[in-house]
Length: 238
Ligand SMILES: C[S@@+](CC[C@H](N)C(=O)[O-])C[C@H]1O[C@@H](n2cnc3c(N)ncnc32)[C@H](O)[C@@H]1O
Image 1 (tube, helix red, strand yellow):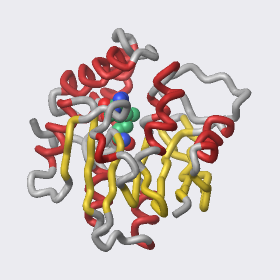
Image 2 (tube, rainbow, N blue to C red):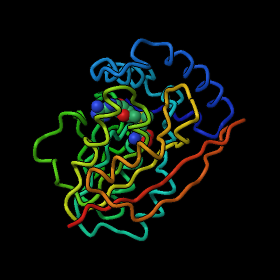
Image 3 (tube, protein in one colour):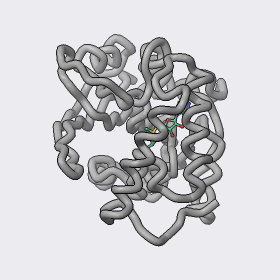
Image 4 (cartoon, rainbow, N blue to C red):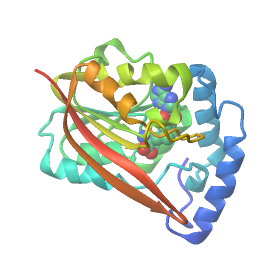
């Protein structure tokens, strides 16, 4: 599978199509479930249903996140091990690998992994189909750099609660976790998906042995919307 090159994020027709498709996929079964298998099926259906048209994958920017790229510029990997959680179409994983990390990118949706491999056929990234909640045993505590972008915010219920520990346990002692997420205050109701992360939720990482070393608030602008985000860097004590 390869993406259709006729238009890209930023083009008006792309966004119009994306908004229409987002409404359809939000109505599919599994869009708001806290059941792991049903949620994974929903993601697979989205990627497979998009059939190579990135407008059908509402979160796909087809470029790495600027906050991640800026951090990587100052923190090259020099061969350290990194993992991009729920890599989707692979842009963040590719940026991490380009910064000198030996990088694994994984996603629960086989069609996402197939699409990422097709987009980057000569990539050094080790793309895998895997489940955040049941990773290979040798991934636990194994990575100098763990990148979490938009995954937790896409989950709700029991799997969201479990996701913080599932993300944190991949970080090696002395390693870093990067979190890119939409955010909101705890008291602000917001129907999802996505469900932005709140301060009390982000505090879970502290309880899981990760120390916040940097945090930056920023906004992402979309037609008619300004969306609050955070980029947070955590470190696990050595
Ligand atoms: C909102 S998308 C973000 C994708 C990518 N990180 C990005 O920033 O574009 C959430 C991703 O999480 C993946 N995902 C959901 N549940 C997962 C799980 N249990 N294990 C691994 N990936 C999962 C989905 O397939 C989807 O690619």
